[in-house]
Amino acid sequence: MYALKTLSRQYVRFIITSFGIALCLILMLFLLAIYHGVADASVRYVRESKADIWVLQRHAANLLRGTSILTNRHGDLIKNVKGIKSMAPILFFTATVNLPGTSASVHLVGYDPVTGKGGPPEILKGDTLRNNDQIVLDNSFAAKYRIKVGDIFVIRDDTLTVAGLSGGTNLFVIQFAFITLEKARELLGFPGILSCYQIVVEPGLNPVSVAGLIRAVSPDLAVFDKVTFLNNNIHEAETGVMPLLYIVALIGAIVLTALLSLILSVYVLEQQRDYAIMKALGAPSEFIPVIIIQQSLILAGNGMILALLMFGPMLKAVGRFSPTVSAQTSFNQILTVASGLLIISLLSSILPLVRQRHIYPLEVFK
Amino acid sequence: MNDQNKICTAELVKVSKVFSRSGNETIAVNNVSFRVCAGELVLLLGPSGSGKTTLLTLLAGLQEPTNGSVFIFGKKVQDYSSAELQRLRANKMGFIFQTFCLLENLNVLENVTLVMKFAGIREKSARSHAVKCLERFGVGHLWNEFPGKLSQGEKQRVAVARAIANGARLVLADEPTGSLATEQGMAIIEFLHDSVTNDGLSVVIASHDERIANYASRVYRLRDGFLL
Image (cartoon, rainbow over all chains, first blue to last red; front, side):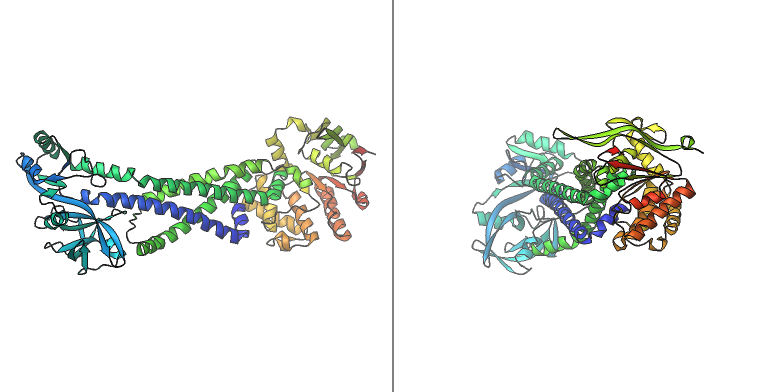
């Protein structure tokens, strides 16, 4: 195959170009993985919650951005609504904690450890909370600051023992930490305060209908069935800074197109005399365009293989270097990038294809 | 058979070619008529700039005359579509260049089979035929070498093999001895002469080398675009 021979004769350039393409692809794969990882992790707490209905302050629509302050009085208003099996008060707030030589923010979640409702979706190490003097930290947060189960963790003037490490609680920009509701209220200094109620309905009842009954009793509250509330949170996760990742990935794709187009144009310039000879000797009109497209596909394919080989180890290295970076790769993402690469390699061929049209067989006779 | 009855492969009738650049006109070929028939080796003899190469490119259908008519295989060149001319060059014509014009990224065998691919010959039969052509010109053993490793004489032999490998009936050679030592150059001309004699090829050679005249069926002398 002439295309492969031309590329491999300049093997140093071939390798460098393939690595350049691979790095662009890794960037795209990485950004997609972060996007999906963060989007998934951001809502995992809600998704894996056993609550059928979420009740928040009026105008609050999600957990990720927005404030919700309720009191026990709100609970008294709705607790007798028909169909409610249980109500779990949860308190959220962000706190800055001092760590050796630095400080960090955590999104504290106060819940009742007796019922366990509103607690971490998954305990990876250690145990759940048993008393007010304990805390469960996000696993990636703990890894980042080298905190282990049993270590002492200080929030304001309170000393807490790390009881366990949780998974599915990394929101990328901040991580959840779990304490008892009583301790959370004590830290805030407002007894009886809470952020939301997680409600479980009686078996066989439709949560949407029960949510309607709660709204009827207390129209000032924001009441969501689980599906709606989950969608609100997904929407919030996907419309924040996250689309920026797609924009950066798009810029990566544009850079890759320009790089590939430039390299292919250089090959056309270098092969100008050969192409003129081929045209003089009677090469069919599609022969040289096919060579250029083949070159583009070979470079792109090579880049993709290298990217896939390097991506796994690179993801592990990033995870080790920065544990709070939450990335999630899937076959669909790889397929998306591969499809994008196919389009990029065809688009990159346009300029060199136009260039080769201006190579004339008469040049051979000069 | 007299000259009038021979099958005419290519013919130029009162052909002129004028190039215009920035308002200045250069007459490369002026009112030239000649023809080449099957089994003939025609020599276009003249110094540099006399219009020899322009005549070859006109015969190849790579450009059209400003005035007059060029006939290739009995049909006026203007009546061929560009695709038909491409197929004609691939199937019925062979080219030999002063600088050989071998493709440096391909080995000797691939250089020869490539033109056969253009002619629509299948890979397997192209390879076996290409090997025979290379052997005929004494370079069969070099089939796996790249042009960069060949001597000038070897390169030109490969170029001649390539020119006839596709079953060409008309071979156009532009200064085929120009880059070769005297002995090597004449060997190439002898190869071409043998092909004319044995295979009934039509060969047109553009050269300033007077010695080729000994092998030519006809010699046309050119100066400043005119046939003398």
